[in-house]
Image (tube, rainbow, N blue to C red):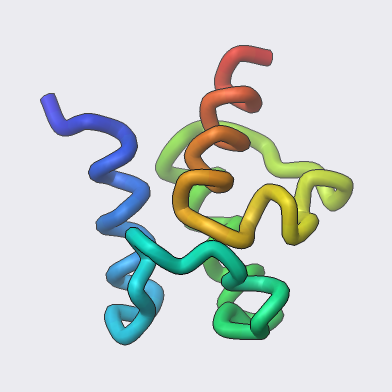
Amino acid sequence: TRRSSDLLMEILMELDDSIDWENETSLIDERILDSFGVISLISELEEQFDIEIEASEIIPQNLNSADAMWKMIQRLQEN
């Protein structure tokens, strides 16, 4: 089976393969990921990971890095 964190990286690369997803830690703060990118990402994450991402979760703290996204996904899957 494919690890879910690998699936996250696949989703991110499909969204924009020019971004260094593995190392970038200020995707929102530095406006590397724009609002359209965030909306596309959220819907893709919800679909692929079978989670619901509330508006209150759509904050830089949860989206500034792939690691932060992964932590949010895991937390939402537990609930």
